[in-house]
Length: 456
Image (cartoon, rainbow, N blue to C red; front, side):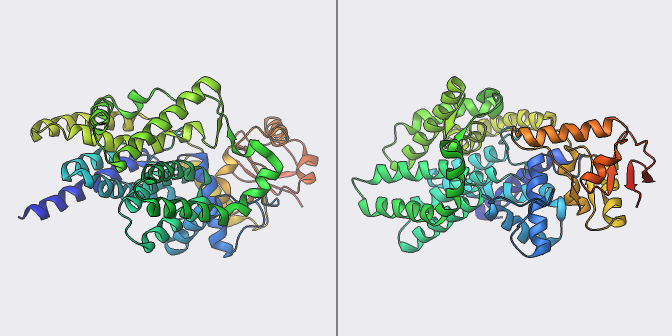
């Protein structure tokens, strides 16, 4: 067998491994892992079913606000149209996206040689996931950075003609429509590279700046309402807690070789290498700044880890490649893989619903009117529309919305009081009640365990 075939098989094995690592949380749980996943797949499914942009919230039926992630939702809606996978999309698609991410890193790291490319690809497959920082196991728009940071750098590093900058422009527009926060680290890296090239290659720098400015101007009208209503608050972010320290999160073995790789890369005079190093420094400073102040502009603190890690794996791969004895590299990688797999298998994810509730929601879909409004625990209500294709009375908000939280308290009190307040149901036109603890109300008919309909 030729060396080229062996290399292709090795890369294929890495890609399969990356897909498996991303799938680990779903081995014993066949549903979305994160409340954000339920949110995105519900919107995407509604777009796919109605063949139009949403004018109302698919959860409660209220008027829908400006969707700043419409590109991402259209992407998911297209997949739903093609496959009909529904809530299986967040189970299957992360593994596919993990493969693409590994390939993008492989292509970018290949500029340092095949050894660095393969090592970086393996380390990319090991990037951690959790519900706070995201990661390859979750279907979240922030994970677009795991693909488009290395891809954008690859394109701009190898840009030779106008077509390459058109492609870069198209990526910028897609990201701005899909997840505006992700464009911040991408633009920062592009800006750094453009500045580094400003003296020796002004044309290249100019094209990079132009692709950034034009893409932002095209999408700017979508941001104006947010700026008008929130002002500086539209780009100011805070968070309720801190993520664990980077070394145990990223992995002690990769972090050790990251420092080695960082040192050796500082000896380089190539602008491409310094763009990555400066990017790492900026993202680390962003995290440090938040820890000391509690707020940030443009960046979301806990969403900075994925852009940081995708750069760190390449630097760590460069550092590990400095070992010239390949069996030693293999042993080190096996240790890193073993420790990482232990971390991935032990990572805890909350589950919005279980199999029993899934079956109950299917029953509601198949046995109630399409215009039915369902009252249930606002937390579990995030999952019902994607399964039952019915509106709910209210859902748990993503932020501290006092009005919604107060209303949700009324719903909780209603359920805790055995659903006895019929007037509350009629006031909000509720036709179905889903109660874990059952209901005791003569105006409700029990049609299935935990499921009630209102008389008349």
